[in-house]
Image 1: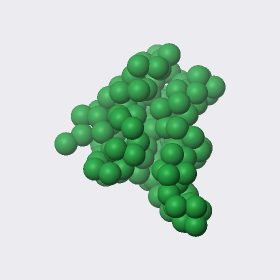
Image 2 (image 1 turned 60 degrees about the vertical axis):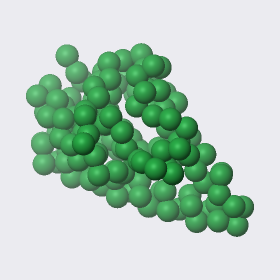
Image 3 (image 1 turned 90 degrees about the vertical axis):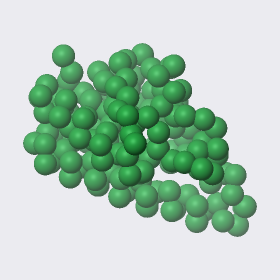
Image 4 (image 1 turned 180 degrees about the vertical axis):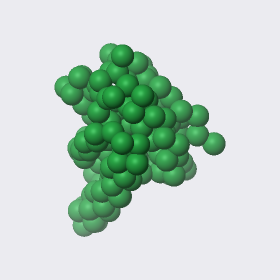
Length: 143
């Protein structure tokens, strides 16, 4: 049923639970596990001009750690895993990636960042993916 499963991550703690679900589904379906981290360009563009590059670099470093976690989770589940980091507006990049890569299922958490980061992201990325995705989206409840 699923050949390509996408787990989208923002690097938050809830990603571990989301990854567990995605990896299990990929394993049970002999599917490829895709990991995607989106560097939210709105966050670094909103920073002061002299700090934008530092903010972007910090987000990219966070993304590398998050994608490494997905790679390890995929290896532990025994599934082929590919990861990618892209820059853009998260919900748009996630849905575009799903369409471009032939994703059969997107797995996301109910929420990621909180507080100021959530306000800066202009609403729930998960909600926006649910509204715009052309493929099924599994939403994992994160406490």
